[in-house]
Image (cartoon, rainbow, N blue to C red; front, top):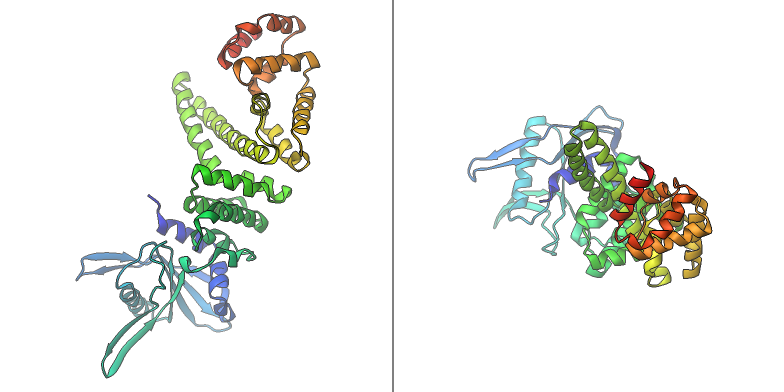
Amino acid sequence: MIDHDRLFKELLSTFFIEFLELFIPDMLTYLETGSVTFLDKEIFTDVTAGERYETDLLAQVQFQGKPSFFLIHVETQATAQAKFGKRMFRYFARLHEKYDYPVYPIVVFSYNQPRQVAPSEYTIEFPDFTVLQFNYRIIQLNQLNWRDFLSQANPVATALMAKMKIAPRDRPKVKAECLRLLVTLKLDPAKMQLISGFVDTYLKLTPEEETAFTLEVGRIQPDTQKKVMEIVTSWMAKGLAQGRREGIEQGIEQGIEQGIEQGIEQGIEQGRREGELKLLTKLLTQQLGELSATTTAQLQGLSEAQLDQLTDQLITLTTMAGLETWLTETEAAEGFDSQQVDVLLQLRQRIGFVTPQQKQRLLQLSAIQWQTLITELANFESVQALDDWLDQQLS
């Protein structure tokens, strides 16, 4: 289950001034931007209803050029709720009573449904007399068009686009645009991770949408495209999860703590590499057409550094022949001569692919061992069989 309150609170507290600048720019004309102090959450109990409420975000700020303060109260609401205005008024009254400061109330409605405009006031009135008309600012994300925020160099806009009004067919494009904008903001790694994680949480794509997303990434400028690929959080999540599993398994087998740590590191690296390989394969297929089994196997044998090099070359690879030449030249640059490159081809035909680690070990073979490998090619039926043979030869 998504912890909406935590995600929104973390985003808005990290980029609070940017949030105000995006949605309530007039406030910045009288707010001292360096005076923001976040206060502890306030807990209110509704004795009548038997319910307990907590404020989401409460900031104390100073009026510009004055020794006086006011409060900004921000509530984030992930579900539509009847009588929500009454709750906002109760928050307002109790905060005003406790702190004796003016209170500026704001609500961010993040739900997908309903689509109608949410109320922004709470009123108590009689036929002949209005006792109370309490207003609060609303930011209803499903009323905002994501396209209107494409030119905003604002981290909050980049994140919240994922929750705005999006046609189903546009979901892959929006995710790609969010990440493209994120790269252009040049934030520190922690803040980039915060926003990319927010976007990935709220824009989980189906397999079909992932394919469309890959095509959208392929249209991004090459220098930005590489950075976008690096921050796709679904790969990071996969790498971390796989790393933990492999680390625990390796630690159990070895019986030492170091095994767990090494396994986690290897799993993260492997997960990242597999994610980049998957995206590259999709991009190449979109750009050049269906890849042959041989070409696919060669791609699987590339190291992470070589995948990065291939990413840099994507814009220049306009034909399948160009890709095949690049792959052959890359293997030659690793130290394989023409005969050995041919042996690698035959191995791939038999066992599917040769891993980067196996290629490194093959380079350690002597000329005599290479001849032995050639004569025994017919015996290899799996990647594991090649590993076992290399273990025997290099022990």
